[in-house]
Image: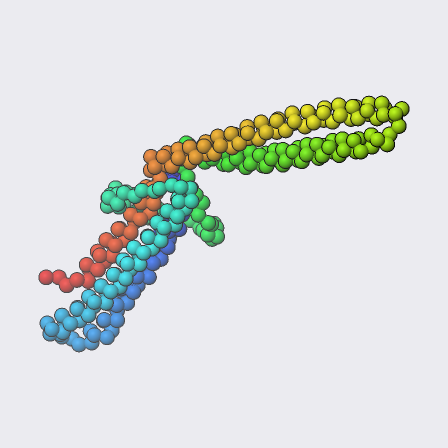
Length: 299
């Protein structure tokens, strides 16, 4: 674990955000500096000024600086909202509900920790090169331990659910085929009986006994086949019922696992990672105020 208590992947995400924030801060500071420089070059051309002139110059400078600082603060707030939106959207895909503690944003100890982390990461001697500039798609937020096991269990149950659905579909197809085969055999028997009744009057007496024996054998064979088909149908129906019960059981386990995952995640401190990313903005604002205070007139 690194200085901020995050794994390597999340710490790299924090560093990328801090790099973005430092760039925006540098641009705004240059803008503020240019405001003062423009004032020096355009207004400070006389050796002496009256009180009204000085007040006018300072009021104009105040308006410009106020506008620049307000614009940066608004942009910073909107940027943080977009960052939160990414994290919340990602969590909702896993049916998770993240919570934040706004009071932690004023935690001086954590703010100093972030400041030390920034100093260590962005000094010239310790600055690390960017290994991969590709922006990966957000992966689902995850905690180690129980939550990870629950996620694996959910994936396993989903796979088992798909297998049971496939098996159920196969059994239904087999049952349908068995019923069709039974219907065909029954029709064949009826046709055979009709043919026997039609041909009885035309068959010679000496052949009638042989024909009856043949019909009896066919009936016996058909009855055996019919019994086999009936037993096979019952077996298929039992397998179909068992598969449906298994499917309901797996779906119930899947639902319970998802609820357990949400409950476990709500008991963790996952949301603190997001808070620590946001707390650094307070130091940036206070640092900017200190810089502006240097230019205020002394009493």
